Figure 1 (cartoon, rainbow, N blue to C red):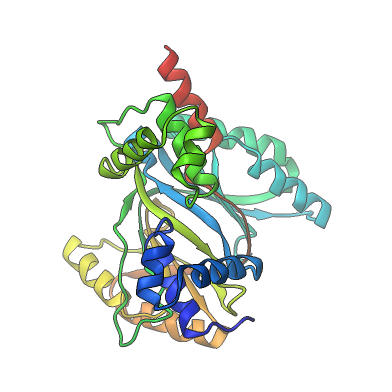
Figure 2 (cartoon, helix red, strand yellow):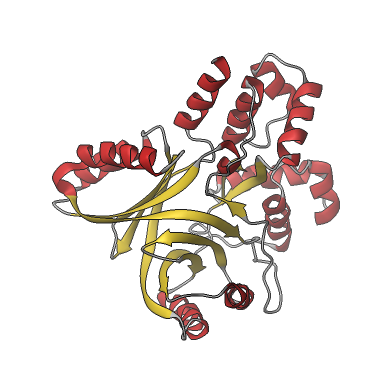
Length: 335
């Protein structure tokens, strides 16, 4: 576990707000020189505290929905587990994959235009996994509510980032090839400078700047994200899957307000299917997690049917624009 000094905490907080924040602005907010900010960021990357810089992309505005899948596996060896991980990671429409412990052994997310396409993607994966599947569950993801990195927060209230819709919208935004290329470049490293992106895409820095501004204004890019490794900072990653009775919208808002008072909440996923909500939390110990879980149970006492908990050991994929989605978007342009 690595400890952070106040300057590094401030740097991480600024980068968590916007991964493309220039060194000059970080320098001003942290109170050290640009050169020292750059050195500290590079050190945080070398230490594994920062895993990279990417984007969050609103696939719903491009006509794609997100679907969650939870797997319980059997006859599993280390070699077979790696084969299954590779199968899902290499699937062109997979967005996210984690290995966990609890009721489920793995969880992953797929992007698809509709439930039929999702079913086709899932059947293809299940055929490859064969006899290693004991059981599985699926969810339709409606929205994701992220929280700002709360390591510097004081008091009992934690700030939410803008919610991101995950279910396909009827009115879709049309991208051109340059914009798709920009998204792919920023997904690799969202701190890449404009000149470098323009060179790779055979465009100009001014054009790239304008297109990025347009992608943000149209809420295709919803966040320039810094990947922070909470594991390196000494936190475990827990997930709670919650099944509720009828939940009035007014009570849902009240529940979210209460949930914001729980420290170290990473994000909340609203779903349709087996569960209604997924809570992703970080805690330094099982005891700390249990305290957080009890607060959630207290808030939902009148509506809670059941819940499952998992500890997530490792994340093997997390991307905003899957290869298959980008390929389909490019094919549509050529029609």
